[in-house]
Length: 524
Image 1 (tube, rainbow, N blue to C red):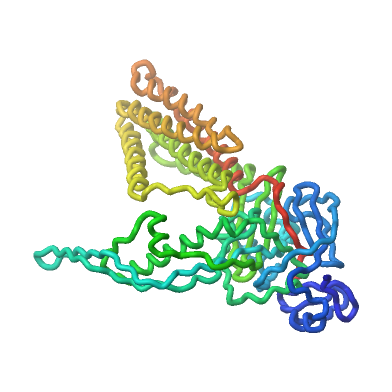
Image 2 (tube, rainbow, N blue to C red):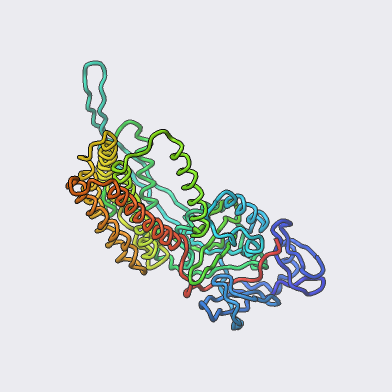
């Protein structure tokens, strides 16, 4: 059914600021409750009628209540003619109406990007910001039951008092049981779980029984992720919460609890008892350049915002060039200059560091493209993080090597060239390790060229090793200036590829699998 004005029969939209349905033609206003009371005969318990539109460019499916139209696809920016048909859709159980207005979404966005230097100019354009769309996103509410029972675990406490060490053992008894109601999970495979997590949480105390009148003037996404995807996760998180509370209440006593997921689940016995769909409000802005899109989304209830902000190459080189010029002028005024050997050695260290940054970006992109952290896509393939001890040890070793290279580099300030070779040798070894990682990460991406800058880095570092161990063959400072320039060229290539891959990381391919429903943009 359409949301029609009781006075003139025109289409009505839900005005966020007034918290009422408002007629677009005669300004008649009424609450959703009042409208429903006056149109009780038209109310359908399980379904409601919508006009469905399909975008020819990306396949997105949009729907709108009768008497409203969809002029273009908000999800790929396509303006091709949309194919229309009438259909019915199943109503969700609950809905959180919009509280934040479109004006507030624009203001929050402008405040966030105001001091960002490198974003494309169009992202700050007022006409672009008018593209914010109100979207109701579907979420699964999953209920988990913890059966009542008493558990007994072994506990220990070790401490020193005076001249004595004490080791105490305990039997820790815990009474568990209860219900976890309405755990929230993104129900749209089109909406990335990482974005959903960044704008969470929604306060479900503000939810209402679903009424399609709340959708008047907004979009709403379809449920495309099965609840089966999240049931295991919901039970696992409820189980972890039980053990977390046991450890918290045990205080200084260390409780010996099962470590494996299977044993923990078996011990607690958590089970899913039900699921239902709720719609939560999100302000959604899409930016497109060629075949990539970026999204900015704001929680329509709390105002929490997250943005994909790509880097504009022209802006980056403009501000970086100005910064480099200022730095050059400052160094030129100093009474002493870096020796050519020191400059070359330091540039080698910076080259390796820039390669490490590039590798980190490639890894993030690979994980994103493979939907490793998105449970809504193919059930998720959540990566298993390395142990903290191993990660800390590896990171510490890496930074020790970097520190050693820096010390060796500054060792050349005494006029000795004996440390140039070892500096470049360490840098070359680090670069070889990075090359292996870069190739592995690039192989798992759609764009497999991310490792190419490492070729230039390997060549210049290998040349630096040779120059460093044969100083008698290369007595001219021009060789060291040349090595420094070669390293700087490698750093520039790493920067270009890093920015390019970063832009891939914060953008996505133009969607071809979105199935969205909704109406015209809200007035507010």
